[in-house]
Image (cartoon, rainbow, N blue to C red; front, side, top):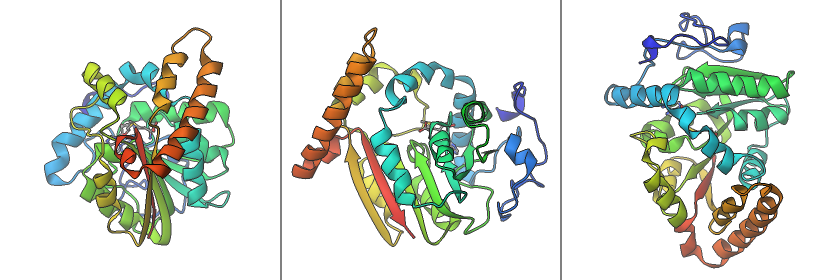
Length: 300
Ligand SMILES: C[S@@+](CC[C@H](N)C(=O)[O-])C[C@H]1O[C@@H](n2cnc3c(N)ncnc32)[C@H](O)[C@@H]1O
């Protein structure tokens, strides 16, 4: 599918993946101008044998269909809806200004923006060059001095050397991946003592389950929301890991966001309900299985 695309106005069809950090095993210490402007590979991306068809289908969907989701994603994820998830996750990474962070599966770059805003040097990767182009635009428009680089790559087989990152960030990416491959890749890329955090949608929140059933065309064929057990399985190989759950009642507040002029009300209701959710999860552990999002924090 990737071969059929025409490059968009602000993407550059580079066929020099081998000379770029696209070459597996190469470090990302020397950042290059081609990386800054985006490295798009229009040939099929490297993928482990049995995963090739899945990766190409994911790529095709995100290149051609993802625009259907843009307004839903704005409704669900526009700030401050996820501030209580994203902010603490970035804090956990404890990255110093200028330090390199991998944003795995950056999509439209909402978190690339949040990471760059903290002064980090962000290496953002995604399968889709349409998504990467949007991410680059988002960051360049609002943070012209940001150090952000955009690389089209498969998260199950990233084109960076072992130990290239001390910190790795991801949101809503693992549930698109083969968990064993993804865990092995995060492990390979992290330095000893390095940290990674991922926030992923879970499978059993009743409103979200209903929403998913009503809108099957807004999702890819192979993505699969997580169970808490998947989080534990993914985290199993790391020396230290913690998980927590977010959003039980808070999703009710989105109905207010749909109303004309309802944004202020949404913000107040969402914040209070999210705080209440935190207390409920602390008191009733079993409720965590019905959270909308789970977060995992890892140390190698
Ligand atoms: C639900 S979006 C999340 C994007 C972003 N992290 C966010 O939270 O806004 C999932 C993204 O993962 C990307 N993706 C799916 N499979 C991938 C893979 N194997 N390697 C890299 N990116 C992938 C998609 O192109 C899409 O942009």
